[in-house]
Amino acid sequence: MNDTPVRGLPPAGRFALAAALCSSVGQTFFIGLFGSGFRAEFALSETMLGTLYGLATLASGLLMFWLGAIADHMLMRRAIVLTGLVLAAGAAMIGLSPNVVWLIAGLFLVRLAGQGLIGHLAVVAAGRYAHRRRGRAVAMATYGFILGEASFPPLVAFALGWLDWRGVWLCAAAGLLLVAVPALWWLARPLIGSGRDDSRNGGPAPELMSRRKLFVHGSFQRVLAVVLVPPFVITALFLHQGALAERLGWSLSTVASGFVLFAALQGLAAFAGGRLIDRFSARALLRFHLLPAGIGVLGLGLIAPGPAMWLMFAGLGMTAGLNGVISGAVWVELFGTLQLGMIRGVYAALMVLSTAAGPVVLGLLLDWQVSLLAMGVALLAWVVIVPLLLVPGVRGFHS
Image 1: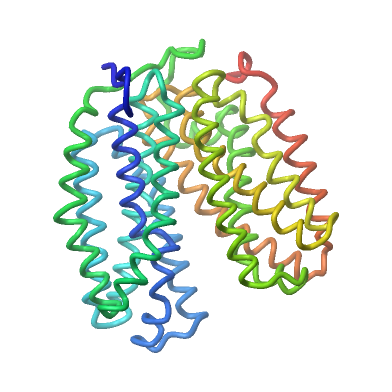
Image 2 (image 1 turned 90 degrees about the vertical axis):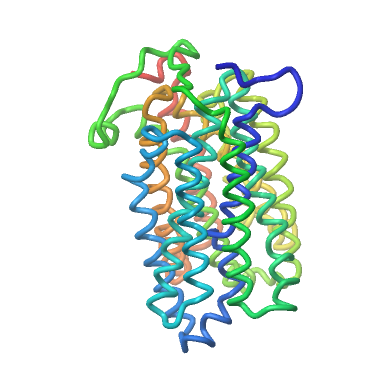
């Protein structure tokens, strides 16, 4: 199937953009807007809400080990409808929750379907069905995530001026059920067949493997040592931004402006990364794409606090944009499309674990009074040395 028309987005790219945008309902930036309402309604402390939310996130993330493979065994239009219905059900449960048990169950469903499966299906569809412009199609999924981050918070803020938090969640459930699910089903109609293009990029014929065999596969392990670094580092720095601001004297308004820079450069880097992948390969970019983040974090201990903040957000944004596209395309280059859902599902679960570990590690380092310069030097050493050692060359990467 050739889904690359001369003009316009490929069908896989259009679907990836829309699905990634719809996943916003299950993302932390969306759910976090209702934290005060949850605490007031159910008499939860910050710690209790954070713990319950973390458990729901961890459980949903670990399920991706197994549920990610639905993209390999179901038609894309059926998988997206089923996942969209689960997301709508979770949103409705939150809006109607009579007690904290219902709330946590609803949070589990929206995290599983939104943050997990819908975003997963967006990237799998782009990687599987966009043969000639795979990098650009995967980049469309990244644009969908960024668009959600930019558009949903102001929409929610506006809606909360008219409705209470329950009403907003019920409106989200209705919008998903009546608009998003039918639209995603329609966009997924062209995405049929195996979409296989397994012999591309000069790689060997793909082999069927179990999850256990995948874990010990050399190529999989080497890629993980690179692509799990950005979620680990970025989540840690963003969660502890308050501690960094106190240590370096940043104002909260300035930090907020830094997030705008982060989002802008993330989008630009995804745009450039998609085209570079189509021209060279995702594997070629693996060796260098962590450098902006390493330089940005090193700047925290080397230069004045003001410029250091902007350098950090700029470096993290560039690496995040590139990593989002690379981590969507590299699995196709290495393993083909036959088991793409299973492989990326395992990666998604490990990414959740890395985002859980990152804040803990950084918190310990800050409590132990480790200097920002030492942290920056250690990270830069990793992002320079490890990719060069583990990604020796595109041709020999399968060994």
